[in-house]
Image (cartoon, rainbow, N blue to C red):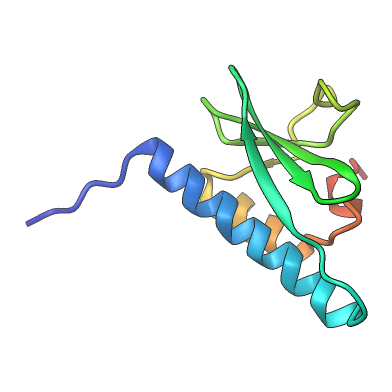
Length: 106
């Protein structure tokens, strides 16, 4: 019996792993308060919202592309990571920090 994971299930699982990684990073460095994340679904993107700070990132629902926010309503121009690509996703998890520095193009 083969279990098939849908595109949406894989993407939401990887978003949850990213949120867990961000919370772990924050907890390891700042013990005096916690940072929580939530996901808001829009027409084209998921907004990864950081409690108390605003939009942390945008995720394209169709492609799994992770974007740095340009504003509260729109992502920046270029994809930073592909959450549906295994290598890109692992690279994202290893570099993720709650300040969003990993989302800048270098």
